[in-house]
Image 1 (cartoon, helix red, strand yellow):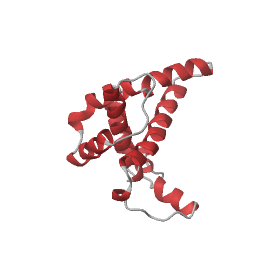
Image 2: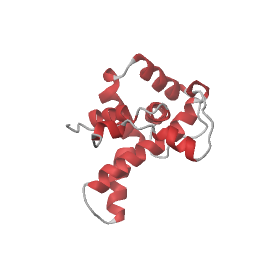
Image 3: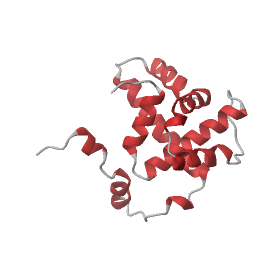
Length: 149
């Protein structure tokens, strides 16, 4: 019998990648919040790019503008505030660790508050990804972008 979309979404992508590339299992608690944000940035960007591209073929510069408007720090901060009350205590703690991390860089076109909030959001996405909670990531993003089921 064929698996449903939801069942397929729960496949352990992280474990698959680790197995195929012979990577060790690492305790998520050992990752710094900035490391979580580093991977979370890519995961969030990939989801947003997929969303934009799947809406239809378009010139690359138009696709880039659409993606940029959703992945920039102010947009991530706004998305976080829309879903903040839907987070578990653990998720909120991960967000706060990321937000409060001392980064030596900052965004060109964002305030320090926007940048830190975006870093917290990316840390949360990175944590959920590395914890194989991809369905949860999608639920958070859908809620933040007001996408109906």
